[in-house]
Length: 165
Image (cartoon, rainbow, N blue to C red):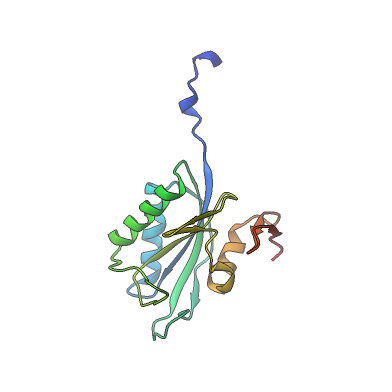
């Protein structure tokens, strides 16, 4: 087909979105694998994924350890649409309520948008980069695993810091 016959709609813009996943109820690893599968269907192709990390609960007391991971997806969706898709995946996998007002509880699945390309979003229900990710080793360890060694991480001041781990 000559180049003039190719329509621009065939070249949809793709974005890299990094999602943090966690589960501390039920078959945690199976739940994370199911979430990753659903992310591939509803958000975009999962191009990198971290190992699973067993971690203690953060911000609340529980006898149930978490299993955490990070995935990188390529998506054509906006940050808002990614949020809607991940919330639908949480519901599908049994999540019954979101944390509100800093009150955390046990959960079958939690999916957070950590990074979306290099953009910042500051809306009441959507903040990118995730505002607490640097305080959470259970996010940063798997995130560094899926970032390329030279890829920059945004700092709290909005500047970039190289991924050197």
